[in-house]
Amino acid sequence: MRGNGQKQSRKMELFIAALLIEGSIERAAHSAGIGVATAWRWHSMKEFQAELKSRQKEITEHVVTSIKSAMSEALEVLRSIMSDAENPASARVAAARSILDNGFKAIETADILTRLEALESTLEERQKS
Image 1: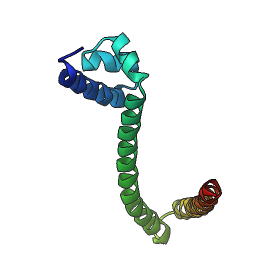
Image 2: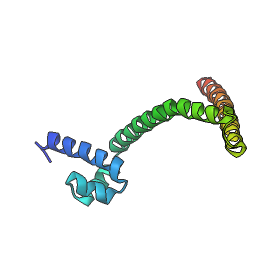
Image 3: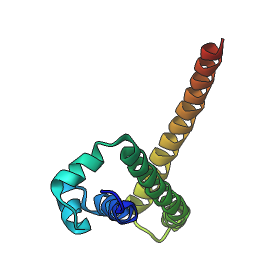
Image 4: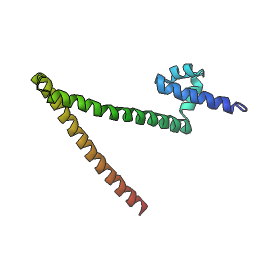
C-alpha cells in the first residue's frame, strides 16, 4: 500500500474508534469501511494492540473519574436518607448498610493497592540487583 500511508493511518484510526464502540472486529471493520481480513491483520499487529490498549485505558480513566465525582453526590443522598427521621426505618437502614458496605470495600481496596505497590517496589529492587 505504498502512497496510501496517510489513508491507511486514517482508516486505522477509524477502525480503532469503531472497535471501542462496536466491540466486534467484524462490525468495527464494516463501520470503518475496511475489509474483515484487513481488520484481523491490523488487530494482530503489536503497534495496533498497543494503541488500542492506550485508547481503552484513556476511556476507562475518564469513566472512573466520572464515577468518582458522582460518588460524592451519591454519598450525600445516602447520608440525607439515613439522617432524615421522617424516612421509613427500612430506607434509613438500607442507606446506612450501603454506606458501610461500600466504605469497607473502599478501605479493603486501598489496603490491597498499598500492599501491591509495596510488593511491586520490592520486586523491582530485586530485579535491579
